Length: 109
Image 1 (tube, rainbow, N blue to C red):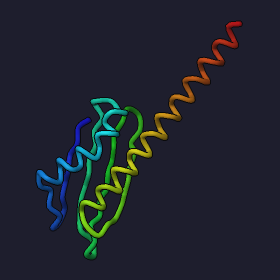
Image 2 (image 1 turned 180 degrees about the vertical axis):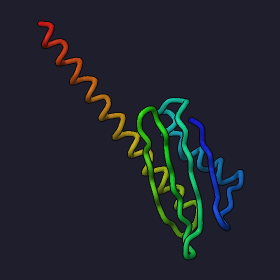
Image 3 (image 1 turned 30 degrees about the vertical axis):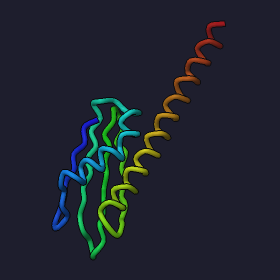
Image 4 (image 1 turned 180 degrees about the horizontal axis):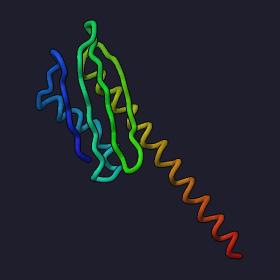
């Protein structure tokens, strides 16, 4: 999975922050294609750090928006939200495949 970190305004995007995000998104990276693209945008609004995440998968884009007192907290919340969405999307796709397979076997009999 390719990860891109952007900073707007006074938000900084240093190497330490990028490595922290990569570590936090390892769980998500194991569940998606290596071709998936994750874009994290960090900005400051009214003294709070705002993090937006977009994970582009084949056929769907998962998005997360979180606000925190500091950048690390906001990024952790976005990573958790994306992980939850990936799990839900994967389970939904798996359920559809199993339903189609069961219907095909029943139709063949």
